Image (cartoon, rainbow, N blue to C red; front, side):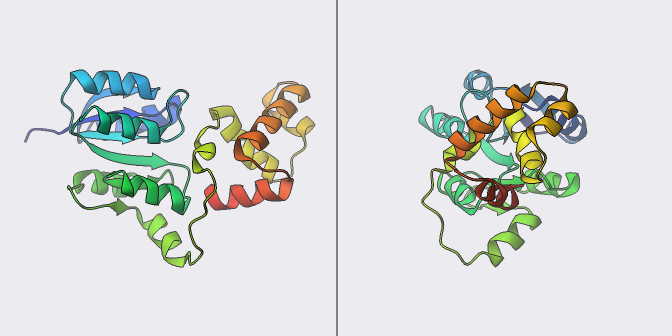
Length: 209
């Protein structure tokens, strides 16, 4: 049986390596890239069946990668895997003809099942997102969803710590950096998410982590 070719685009090295190690038993992993630009460059020059794409990347965000692939008319099945479970992001990906959207809480077995069963014209989500979307009766927010996928890996790491009430000094000691560095990260997070208070940050954390 000929294995389908898959490319992974994920900037977190430990997560990326873990996914690659698991999938290589079932797919031919043609590439594993940390940036959207690297992935697009490779896909322009190589025929690949599947792209497993994170939204939070250091250069182009995942949405921009998808739009660029469409603009370049690169035919590939796209499965988004993201820590963000915001309904607006999921609907945006569906409109962009993404084939599936998975939370990073998805099990390896369910992710594999979704990758095997992606088909044209059908949009799949994992079981954790089905439950969340079914329970959500609120209209989709008009907020700028792209701000949520502009966070750096370090900022993403800090959101749960801030939301759980750790002080800048606590976090600085834990990460062996200065309090000034942590304060700078916090200001950047507030700016990128367009929030003004700790309460808003906690709400963001519960909605997206």
